[in-house]
Amino acid sequence: MGDIAFVFAGLFVGLVVGLTGVGGGSLMTPILIFFFGVKPYMAVGTDLLFAAFTKAGGTIKLARSGRIDWPVVLNLSAGSIPAALITLYLLHEAGTTSATVQKVMTSTLGLALLLTAAATLYKALRGKTSPKEVAAGQEAVAARPRHWSLPLLFGAVIGTLVTLTSVGAGAIGVTVLMILYPLLPLPRIIAADIAYAVPLTLVAGLGHASLGSVDWHMLAALLAGSLPGIWIGSHLVVKTPERIIRSLLSVLLAYAGLKLIAL
Image (cartoon, rainbow, N blue to C red; front, side):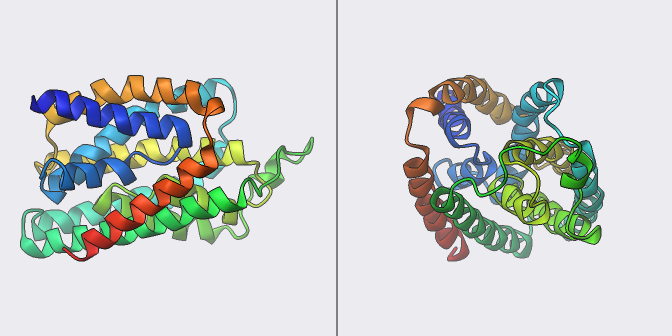
């Protein structure tokens, strides 16, 4: 019964990700904590590898279509990967099962969900404010940030957030990229966000696995549901009111965030 419940949870999250593009971590981690009673450190560790596997397929597809701006991915990864490794070292020293670490994780997760809710609502209300395409010969200019240090700085913040909570590489990452790369079209921003999330979540997830914070059996059940869920969602996206779904989702994420902070 437990395995079937995890499969259906994965199916639901995959469906929402396919419909809206909102990161699975912002949904899966709260679901594991609230509905299945999974400890925060185990929920975060398992969800990180869940995200790495689910986004890897999307990255391969986007890379083949030539939509990924690799300089953007490398700039963000240069800040996020070292930050993830430092955070993992601190978690190793403090111990993931300690009450203090658990409290930091749930509070930070609550904050990350509130930020994700705000970013999701902003995108739902404002719509696509970035340019639709890059002018011929301007590809290199569009892939240049407002300042070279900003991707490193924001990448480090997101890397720390993702390693602690498994949340941050979705709606928050897209919003950050829209600010840092104002000339980059939204489809390429989303592609870069998905691509840089793969090495980040893989490094952070394997780091958590080395700390014993991954339930491999649960991970397999979640993936069994999520992969067909993403496929179904991506095919239904043209038939659903995306703005309404995003607005409702932002309210749900804000509620979960406030509840986690109050734990």
